[in-house]
Picture 1 (tube, rainbow, N blue to C red):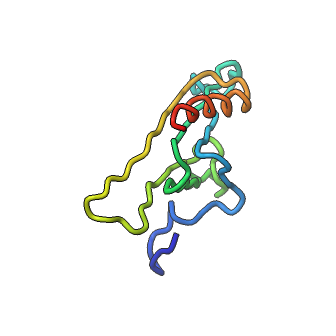
Picture 2 (picture 1 turned 135 degrees about the vertical axis):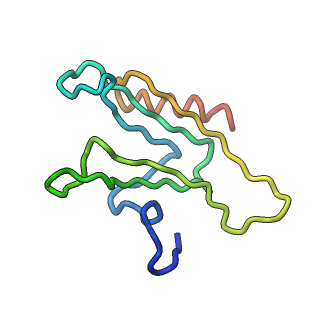
Length: 120
């Protein structure tokens, strides 16, 4: 996305190595917030009914003591970007948020595909 020189670019500039192939994403979180336990991993899943004009953004602005990004605190966001809006025209999208026990990435993809099929 274009932006004015000198402006805040926190959620405008794309991550150089991350790409979204379908309009959903997920992350893993510790269900009881105790990193010493390993049997409580939850998946935080965001699904969208369309790819465009949804724009995904991710970054990690929380730093550890050594200055590196804290891998336990990423930030994911999305914007609904209408490049040439028209007065009186309605714009919308559907989204779905799931938090559920994590099994595997294939199951998450299947959950998205079943949900997205309803909008075809």
